[in-house]
Length: 213
Image (cartoon, rainbow, N blue to C red; front, side, top):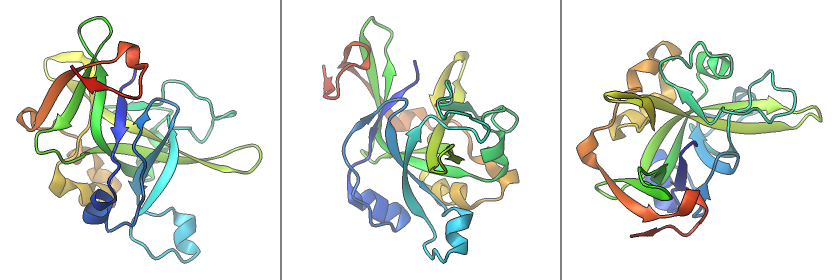
C-alpha cells in the first residue's frame, strides 16, 4: 500500500521556505485524496500575467497522465526516481520540468507488525520537503484537473522497499528551478540520522487521529 502523509499545516513554513501566503489545513492525505503542493506557475498562468515565482496548488495525490481517458489511473501515487523519465505515466511531466514540493509533518508507513504504522519525522521538528511531479489533465468536460506523485528511491540494501525522496533544505529551491537535465542530481537518500521513527497505533491506516504508542 502506498505511503500516507500528514500535511504541513503551519502557514509560517510556506512563508519562510517559499515566500507564499498560504492557509493549509491539518490532515492525513491518502492516495486519491486532495493534497497541497508547491510549484512554479503553469506556463499558461505566466502568459496571462502571473508574477509570483512560486504558487501553491491543490491537486489529487495520484498523477493523472495526459493520455488518461477518465482520470482514474491506478498506481500513479509514486514514481520511481530511477525510471520515471522513461515510464509512460511520468515521462511527460519529467521532460517538461513539472516538479513540485509537498510539505509534510510526517510520513506514515506500514510497520513490520500486523496493524502497526511507523511515523517518520525530522529530528529537528521541521516539515519534510518531499520531491514530486505534477500534471494538469484536461477532462472531457474541459476542466483542468491538477494531480501529483511522490518520487521514490529504493531503500539501501533492500531494493524491494521504496522511500519517498526527502529534499535537503539547501536543495529545495534549486529542485523547483533547475533545468530538466539536472533533475536526477537532487534525487538522493536523506541522512538517516536526521530522521526519527516511532510506532503509532493505527490499524491499516484507518484513523485520522494517529497517536504515538
